Image 1 (cartoon, one colour):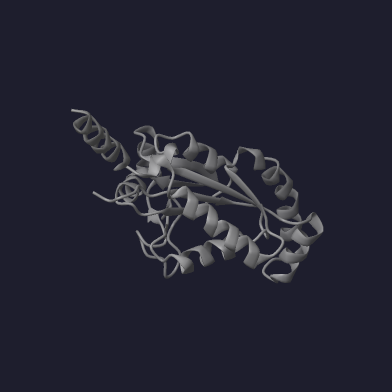
Image 2 (tube, helix red, strand yellow):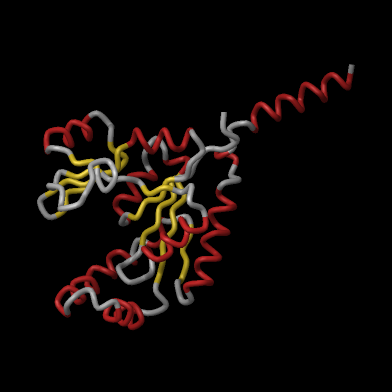
Length: 214
């Protein structure tokens, strides 16, 4: 039996707040942390591998998984279903492996309210300002003005749910935020719920104490 349970580490933020970069740095710090592989009903794109990039499913397979409780969270986006299969995540937690989720507030809420919610660590990233958020989106040079405008419109809805997370970090300096993120994960790994051997240890102490009184 492992000496600890794994964590479901949820990172959420509006686009441009640094979520992807910090997720990558977290895995560089501890390569044993794995990304949750999502399930989707969309067709595979060129080069994508089933089970590695996504678990590709038919609509019927996905809906059955949802109806039987096989998804931790799911959503319908642009005509396709996306979700997080419960089985692999549950197995990882039991094995003491942390699983990282890059999802929005709705997915985070579903996971937190699931049967595995006890092992969830949710972290929301805020930008230092709206102006800086827009600057970061523009500096990435990945999207046109119209897409950036849509991301900015969506950002306030995402930010408005900051209060439902365990921790909230203002990502003003990337290195500083990374250090605080690592500290949070390190501390969460020591939560009572993550240490399955504690009960047996306490019982052992109790027996030792009682034997000493005889």
